[in-house]
Image (cartoon, rainbow, N blue to C red; front, side, top):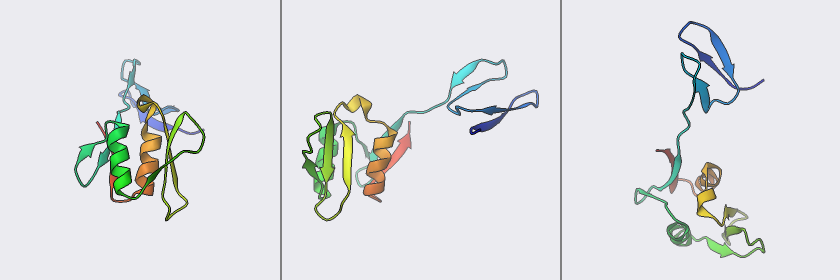
Length: 114
């Protein structure tokens, strides 16, 4: 069993397996998850397109990698074995991809809730 323990108004504790959804005091489910954005720390700008991300990554020494998968944008550095793979559709760019970029570019990017 995994999840989050939630205390209800009546003092009863309940294990919630999906912490992004929980019930209020009336038992109504409500969403509490927040949307995340990737922020370029030196400029404070939110990355809102692949063209802006491409420009930032190229400035950091990343190059486009054409590995054969037409559904992905990929970047690599000659100085490392790291590869950044992103879905071609920016609408599918989610926190998993954002954190991958943050880990491979420390102190340059940050993921923030909005």
